[in-house]
Image (tube, rainbow, N blue to C red; front, side, top):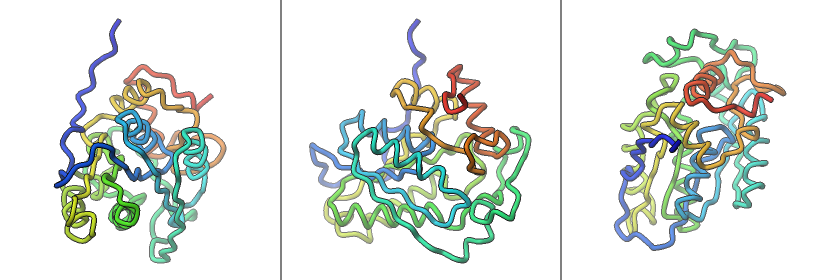
Length: 244
């Protein structure tokens, strides 16, 4: 039986290059989670020469960073790790271990709301750092893994935000104003189940990825990220080897 076709709206970047090159270099924003790992594998399959950018910002655990390191090493891609200290982020449950993580029914997670796990300005910061790196090493493309279908209500995971950020990058960097920086969000219009199917087709090592907000040795199964991931695998009919 043939594999189901996935409707990827990845041919429409948020900004088209003025002078595209035949061999493209991409900065992949990379957390070690399912979505960003799928983006990295997708970019490599598309022929991009990739470098990853992983940012720590005071998260309550470093488990996902270990995943990012293992996956990047497995693929042999050049990595950039940055430790950014922003003390005012302490009011977020992803950075403050004294706060309880949300534990909502799955159907309530995807409603339009901004949860306590929202990190103020995180993706704006990440894209700015990626833009600086791209400008410095003459990279053509920035690739990120936001998803506007099955998500937790983050305002910085929307197409509108990425379009605006791409415009800013292309007005405020040397690379942007001369050649243009392509900004891609390959997973933006996919459901979590479709992301899992795409990842399976790309042979993403699920057992090396980490999505849980709580950290630890095994996923908690209770946080928003765990629940959305579990539903995606169930709907896709794919085994999540990270749970073995």
